[in-house]
Image (tube, rainbow, N blue to C red; front, top):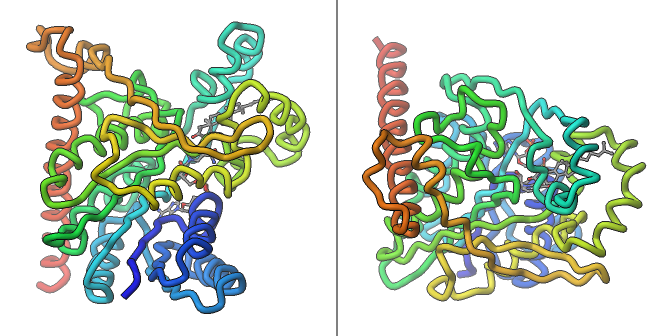
Length: 360
Ligand SMILES: NC(=O)C1=CN([C@@H]2O[C@H](COP(=O)(O)OP(=O)(O)OC[C@H]3O[C@@H](n4cnc5c(N)ncnc54)[C@H](OP(=O)(O)O)[C@@H]3O)[C@@H](O)[C@H]2O)C=CC1
Ligand SMILES: CC(C)=CCC[C@@H](C)[C@H]1CC[C@H]2C3=C(CC[C@]12C)[C@@]1(C)CCC(=O)[C@@H](C)[C@@H]1CC3
């Protein structure tokens, strides 16, 4: 029986490109597309089967922003498969983005122009909304729904004598300054995307600590800047077309402009071929494209000087000495993990109450 791979957000962009690459590499795969929109999912499946007619591709309806949908989809996955070798947590949103053009022009003529272009730092804010579960939508989609999915798929991921990989599509826009332990949903801020991606980096660390002993290994990747529905939601396509020559020129100076979904999926694909035991839990794996268009994957250490968040978000006085940077990383990721567990408990209780309400 071939390996089983589940990809969330597989009907477009980086997720779909990853599926194409996986099937080109291993025709025996059992590929499952986790998508909220069935029409787009069918179109993606059709496209994959056109290029790989013998491939085993199935669809699971999954809206990661909805607790009910995640629980139902996980139940169906457990029913369909008896193993899960790779879980790609790729679905993501950046709703109602707003570009700070003033900061952009200022940054353009500063020494940090390349950094600004490759991280988008200081340029973007978003207006978040609430899900029907009462959660912040960006948090629910980019982080919490995926966390719940991992928890629900534990029996398939943790199998004695076998290892499995959980792989998060994070971003170089993940910034520690946007994240706060006291507000993990980012209710009070304007950078929910950045916060959710930083939280996914922290959560991956916690998952490794929790699950490595059971053969589950978690990694995070950065796809670079890729032209997809997500980026077309930031600037209209005519503006992207206008600045595209600048993007290609900038590729000479930064290898993070992967631009095409195929290139952006590089690190996701690279991880598929690695022995999970050899991966560094403190690394973020970057998809990079050179000026000449060659793709490669590079591990870069996740930032370890998190004392800034600690001092901002944990109660004073901080009980941790500054020279304990690695431990502090661990402490914050553990604290986030505990908060997610508590939230999971709350939403499960709420669902139970609602179910009881309906039946009585
Ligand atoms: N493009 C870029 O430059 C970068 C992207 N990323 C990350 O890459 C990932 C993929 O994004 P990308 O390919 O660029 O953008 P796309 O918008 O093309 O893909 C996002 C995918 O996520 C799916 N999705 C969104 N919300 C949900 C939901 N509630 N439930 C299930 N699926 C959902 C979308 O499905 P639907 O069609 O139904 O909307 C779509 O398939 C995201 O996590 C993004 O944050 C990170 C760094 C840079
Ligand atoms: C209006 C003009 C001429 C330029 C504006 C450019 C910005 C909109 C653009 C520059 C760097 C981009 C960027 C992202 C979005 C668009 C930019 C800010 C991301 C934040 C998109 C999502 C990600 O996850 C990041 C990796 C991207 C980083 C760079």
